[in-house]
Image (cartoon, rainbow, N blue to C red; front, side):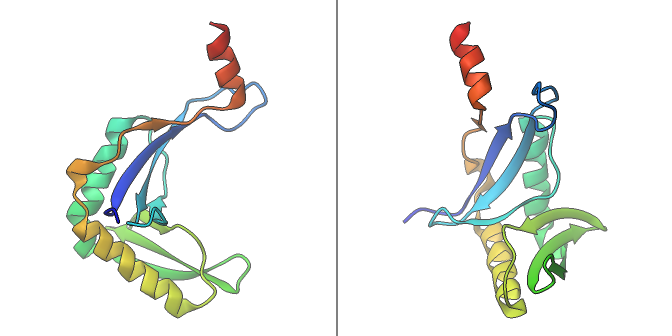
Length: 138
């Protein structure tokens, strides 16, 4: 079985039908079983700024304030971590029970503490079918 690790992914921009816009880079924390434990709240302009955010999260995880809140529909629960009122991480999914949400928050925090940030997975770039066709035509 593997170890927990951060995954950094750059995705094509969402938006208009012409595909215009800048790509966005995000991080996710994956568990040993490849299940997503948590993710960033914001998009980053490039891989380096995303890596810096991962490092900041790891350095400040112990002083991060957890927020447990209801999601839509109001029967589900999500967690969020903030440092100095700046949101850093969000639960990967919503939970049916508050205790499940709290448990998974604890798992995320423990995973961040035990993850070697020097082993961030290689940067992946996701493309759309349209981008693949344009690249193939070149």
